Length: 499
View 1 (cartoon, one colour):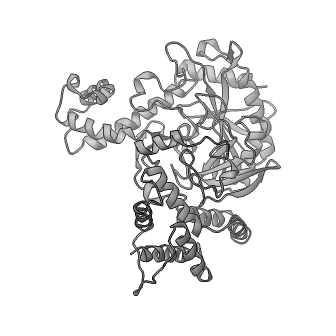
View 2 (spheres, one colour):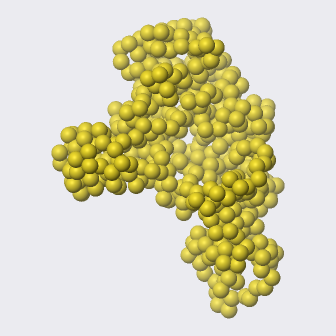
């Protein structure tokens, strides 16, 4: 009975604290309105439920059956978000709750509450995140995190067709804009009735904190400019990052680079990503100390990491901003033909930095990863980008999250690896592989040559491990200074040029 499912959702709201007992009748009536129902029969016995996903499925199935909701994946997502929006408190209440916890219990208590809240409202869909495949691969650079992302819903053909027919709108300008808070969404823009943001001030400017709905690591948050303004790495960027970790010392925060290929997926809106997680790069040691003239008070050095990373540590955040700006300015204009580094070609700039900030033992720390997006006929997607022989596993941009040591791999790999495991165990000749596995053929031959012991019991851990080692190669390809004698000499030449 649909009245039972509605009462289950009301009870869920009460149990999670999203609504209070005084709200019960009002919320029930709001849910009836959303469902386009005008009648409710109170269940005779106590109403229990197992999980939120099944409650929402019952309600959406009923709405679809009555023609209230279209029957495709996107329309269903829009509708169940509308239902959750009824339970989600208004922004003023959420912000007051956050600020009260921040002041009385500290920053970690505030983010703990907000992260749970963002899951309870189903903005972060716990049941989808659980589908992601995750494992760790040991490499010479540390333990790399590998994920195959399965939590982003794949659109079905009906949803794709409906999105094409949907009227185009420039509101909100992008999925990061503050105007998404409470927005109902449409076939080509996700619903956000259950989305709440926390205003922040960093570098004396208006920014906001939210969580990513696709949690790639613990408490994966997004920090974004209140204005829809393009990504730019500049002196002010370092100030903003350090201000943020001053406010939330238990979080790291970093920025994607501001150029195509080496930048993030959304370069049109200035934003950072952070969270409560320590990546392999953060654990990597400094392998070569360096003293910058005039900055003897700043601990500096080259990090033992496949991507070219300079680490700066100081109690004085202003000194870090000043030195990071000098390094950025030097790198923007730096060329070294022997390492195939060109600051620009035909007026197009190539050099930029991926910066990451954290607190370490009470001191401020900045990691500056040198990036270059030059392309050649041999490497049309980028010289310092995964090379073609690795594209069967990872072809997409190497953004901030990958730079730090977490691979976000495409969902196609789940099916491909299951099929590849079968043909490897059966020792099927690669010439007989189905078409979608042909791209893995050379890699598969190499795996068998190195793992004659491969069988049905161990094939999956072997494949996972091999994917992790491919990701280590991806990071090596993306490093502007290679981990050899010539690369290290080139890196030292650049550091010596910083004045």
